[in-house]
Length: 260
Image 1 (tube, one colour):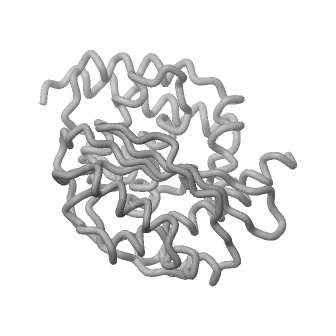
Image 2 (spheres, helix red, strand yellow):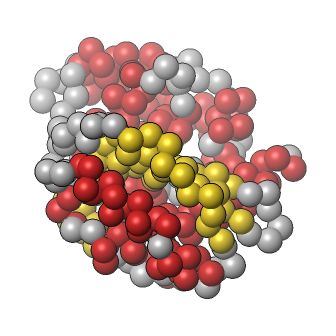
């Protein structure tokens, strides 16, 4: 219980960093050069109640090396620090952990009174965008709640996010219960998006099988502490997890039977 509470506190601080990063990125980087994906996309653009531990983006420009230098300067500059200071959070120990033709990954720590230091990741992938992002404003209600500004960024819409999550379920070496939670959220909030998603039927079936076998204990450990307090009571119980899994595997199997 104590560890879950610590993770919850860290997740709140990480979310404040994510918003600060997006605000500064929107001001200092060309919007057409990158697109937000993964859990942060769902949280800030697609109304998810799950906070993300990291922030992942696709690089869409033509000079990844120079872009990486700009992101590095952004992460070590004063703008993010000033925004975080307003929320009593301090970012430190920013390090470029991986730099290749396809990946730029930074790790950093966050300090806030009353919690152990949190570690988070910022990662840009340069593998091309298989789907088209859209330029939209982040959720203004969430931004206000966090004391920030809802900026406009490229991000992936619901149908693309579904396809990305199905791929994640199929391709990860270790299954992550957050992928099941995220798919359930997308299916419920955007019921038309599943039919629009570019899914290979065999992979939808495979993802359904993987979702079926994710245990409640794993979900409780890895997802529950990241849930927004407004929904935690609704989605923390074992019955809620069982229902999520059933909805996800049923809809994936039904989708696999219908050719797009």
